[in-house]
Image (cartoon, rainbow, N blue to C red):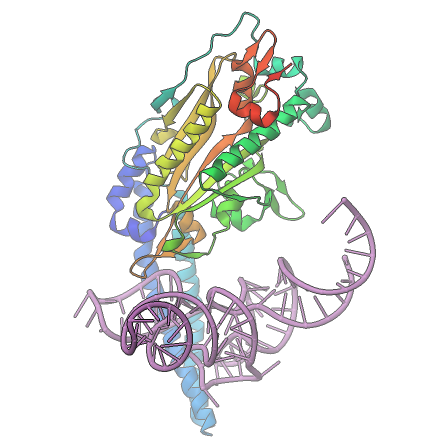
Length: 423
RNA sequence: GGUGAGGUGGGUGAGUGGCUUAAACCAACAGUUUGCUAAACUGUCGUACUGGAAACGGUACCGGGGGUUCGAAUCCCCCCCUCACCGCCA
C-alpha cells in the first residue's frame, strides 16, 4: 500500500510513475485526495464532539461526588444529544475512511524510475547474459522424457495419488532435490543469511501483510475449516514475522533464508507452459528475504542479484538477468530482476528466480517500522528473491547435461548428491 | 476434543465504574559523576490519525467485535488466541 502522506504531497508524481505500470491512476488518486479532505473534516467534527462528551462526563462525575445530583442530571441532557450526534458522525467518518482505504489498496506499488516502459514480457530489458548454450547430442530429449527414462520423477504416479502438478521424485531424482536444497541453504548461510523453517500454512492477516490477499485469493490453496492458507512462497511467513514490529536501525540488514514447499493453484494455466516441471502446484524453493533501511535497499537489491547469479554460475547453467518492464511487474514490486536459465532441449528460457525490492509497500501494509537516527518512526523496506526455485533448475540441469550415457551433475552439486551421473 | 485459568505498553505486571493523563519494576536512550569499567543519581521513554509555522493541543487504542452507562481496561454478550491438566497422537 502506498503511503497516504506521500500521495498527498506528490500526487502528480505518483500518477506519472504508475503510468509506467500501465495504470491510469489519475481518477483514483483524485478520488483519494478528495475523500481525504472530507474524511479529515468528518474526523474533526467527530473529535470535537467526543472532546465535549469527555469533558461533560468528567464534570458530571465531579458533581455527583459533590452531591449536586440535580446539576449533574441537567448536564446529562446535553450528553444525550451529543451521543445521538456521535453515532452519525462516527458512521460518516468510518465510511469515508474505509472508502479511502479501499481505493488506496487498489493502487499498485510505484515502479522505480529506472524501470522500462512496456506492456508485456516482450518489453523486458535483458541486463546480463552469461554462460554458453550447450550443443546437445542427437538423441537429446526434454526433461519429462528424461525423467521417465531414468525413473527419477514420476508424473503419472502424482496424477494417481494427488493430481496433475504434484509429481513424485524417486531415487536419484529425490536425492537431487535434497542435494539442491542443501546446496542453496549452505550457500545462503555462507553469505550471511539466517536460516528459518517457517510454517507452511498461514492465517488471513499474513496473507494481507505481504499482499497475496485480497488480489490473489484464488491462487492459494485454502483450508476452509481452519481458515488457513497454504503458502505460495516462504516469503509470506518469513516476512510476516515482522508484522507490527518496530525495529531499531541497528537491526539492519535482516537477512533470512528459508526452504519451503510452495503451493500454488495456478488456475488458468495450460499447454506446454505446464508440461513436466515447467509449472507445478507444489514445488520446493529456497527464498531469501531482507529487511533494510530505506536508504540502503537498492544496494541490497544489487547484492541479492549478485548472490543469485553466483548460484547459477556454480551450477554451470547459462542464464540471463531480465529487468522487468512496468507492464510485467507484480502489483507489489518497485523493481524486479528475473533470472532465466536456458533449457536446452525445450529451447526456451525458464524463469527460476525473481528478485524484488518492495520498498515500503509491504511494510506499510504490515506496519513494519523502525526508529531512525532522529527517533522518528518510519517504514522499513522489504526485499526478497528466490535462491532458488527447484523444478526449473532441475529441468535445465537434466536437459543441458544429458549425454548418451546419462546425465552429468555439475561438480559443485555432485558434492551434495553423492553421485556425478544419473544413469 | 474435555475442564480450568488467562490475554494490559519493548518485557514483567498492578489496576472490579470517575482520583488512570494506565502505577511500579526491568530493559532502552540521554545526561551527571568517573582515569576506564561498573554502580549510583537525574531526565526521557507507546502507536496512529488529526489541528498548528512552531510552541503546544485534540481523538482513538488495555486480544477482536458488539452492548449497558453521563462516563468502561474494569460490567454484560459473541468471537479469536494463549497457558495448564486430561484424552488422543508423530
